[in-house]
Image (cartoon, rainbow, N blue to C red):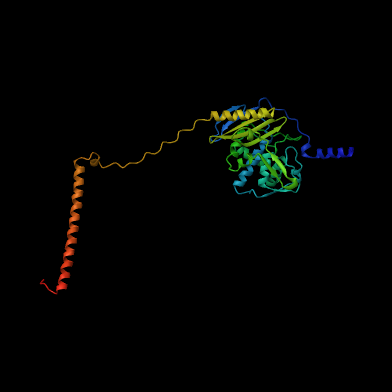
Length: 350
């Protein structure tokens, strides 16, 4: 029995899930460390509190994984039907996961659902290796894209957002930068298809695995269809939430709540407040006036000139009718005369 326990402990210590973690200060607070609400259409800030405070985004950083892959798909560099193979490193990941096994293959579409719904760390690593060769290579791409988006207070050190191992730094960002990232994700048509999914299954048969969303606002807040939650103890509970109402969309980012219920309650309050603070839409432009052709000046009042013009037109039509009638009568007379001449056999002098 002791041997079994010893082997289990040695195995655990050798895996990333149980690797020694670096000591980092706790930044969680009540009700939260920082928050921001923005109008998704314009990016205008509707509310903010400590929005530039440095925080640990935890699994919310998977929005950057998600964004990079969506951009590659839109650019034709990847397809949802591509197959992603699970490497040993990915299979060893702990925390939130879908228990990938070494050598398994899944479509990129299935992997994106697992990344979004289950926040699967093993999937994040598998995708990073698939696209960049190594997780660190993918992290470089994440930081490059963050710089391009103007996320000046963000530094990614992982692809999953877990607490850092000894000798590594934590992922760092701000509520404002996460809002910027969220708005960029929303530009992609397929994004909400993944983030709005509440329940989905991975694999078939006996290995079928249920993936249920971590985002409770999908059920609790009308119109909510994304985006991403995150948590570890020192970071607290965080969320980037988005919802629509009357055809308009807002994004609320709440970072570093000590308790999950508080985070969710505040996110719902801030979404509601955001909708109330949206500027009124400008009134629709008035319909273009119907173009009515104006009568000629002399016709407006029906005066002498207008009457004279109508009389002259009438006389002209009458004369034309008389001429046509005379022509017809003459033609009939000639035809009748020729007919009687031929019938009676008489001639006439010319």
